[in-house]
Length: 600
Image 1: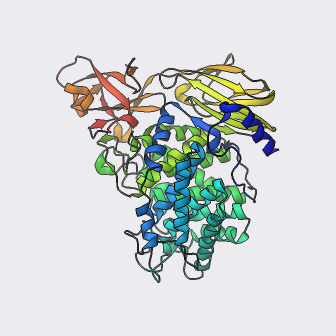
Image 2: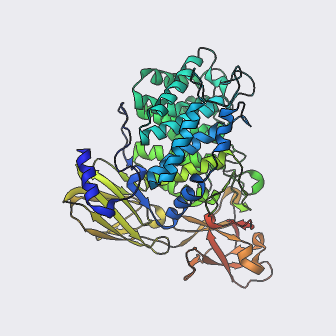
Image 3: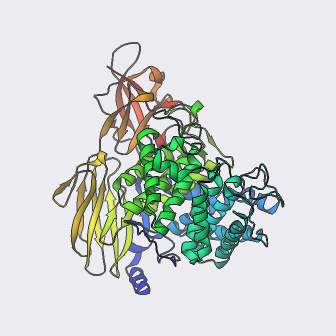
């Protein structure tokens, strides 16, 4: 049946040609016990245009396709590596670049992938070791080796992703040998908690690829090792992740509150719950999500200050607070994607959108090559070209973005983006393409067209975030949530006109930002910089007119620009403040801010 569907796709011509993998990737051999409520599409089944599509394309062309992989591999070839976690970077690149190749079909990127994988696997030792530490000082067996298991985690994620999309048996066998070494080491030699920083959370985050390896192979030893990791949380000195989140329900008081490592474990626990059907595990993860959204999440969709979950509502804005570590932002995106898949709750999709359009893309230089480690809500952006965890993590978040622009359930095709985009599905053996042409982010209307070789019956769902409500489609009005059009027979060329709210809004601050106001436009949080505002460059002294929302500047070219009314400290005359999306601000090193004093 699959080959027939692929033949039909091919015969339909260029309408369906995008991506590198028109078929499904290597399937799991173990079915989940907790089935996904909604399923993301494979990267090769989607194309995203518009504002977000531009950022995705820049990430591929100007970062993933051109990154120098020589220093990423150097520590494997000449041990020890240049720093303790140098081994994480090549796995992160493999993960992101494989997804990017599956999305674009770029042949040069595929050749680069093949070469890096071959070089990496060639450094694997007979016992399965694939790291950057010298013999006798490995896998946390001495002080200072606390990032070795962590690096193996990323090698596993990178190689398993590459195997899934290419079918490379050497990549799978290298992954198995790594996992076998870990099984032989923990707990036979020592507890896995002792092999990683942050009360063991760095090492135990290997849970995610271990579960994925079990699903791909069916080898029960890997499931047993995953169970061991989860029980090890509760050992003396361990992070106690599940127990604490089930009882105290507070991420800042779980383990040592280190955001990136804890979120990595939560992503792994979602895979574990999917695999085992363990709903209390999912409850613990849900408690963490609820706590983070209520108490530790910035308006821009980032979490963490000083790399940790801070006290309730303590969300400092400036550079000196090390705001919104990019690694934590990417892993927060991964967690929301996991929970969206498992539950179908659109609240998780709303948080994905918030992070994508704001803090993740704010950390990415608009040209795509460089990233910020931290991204303040006021101050300056500090892009760098160094090999850092965040420089390697950021591209992974954008490489995942196409996969959740559209979703599928057993009964419905789901549109989860307002950008111009298209996606292909298989519905009861029939190929279906949805093509959306949208005026977003400048105007609130779009047209969705169905392309099918023969009549196909399915329902449609559209996600409606609060900022876009109400959605008007098919003569009906829909509030925030999922707007569902019942199943019907669709024929080639059938189309729907959609209208949605797209306007400026004021957001009143609280706690850290009490008596301040920020402005948004659709999903975008807006910022103003000193360079574009001339005499108004004394940004901290300005007072926003909260009751006058920002207005889109017409004829501003490709860049989005807005004006808002402000008053300065010198008089009460209202003046225009030029604003733009936070993600587009600060690329030249200029001072900017999001939160402003409120004009009473």
